Image (cartoon, rainbow, N blue to C red):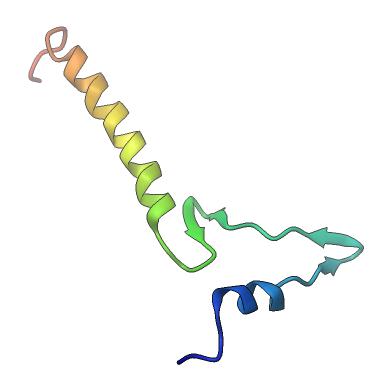
Length: 71
């Protein structure tokens, strides 16, 4: 059995980081260079964001297909 649990990890990460007097806030997900990255290095938020953007674009092309030529 592992000596670490999710609760002990959260407790050890409960420290504050300050740079030039400004506190850096802890977040579960951040966007860096256009890519969403979760705290456990998961891509689920980024994939969800891409799904939303692609579905909007596909829907827009679907609605305008009768008004545009094939060229």
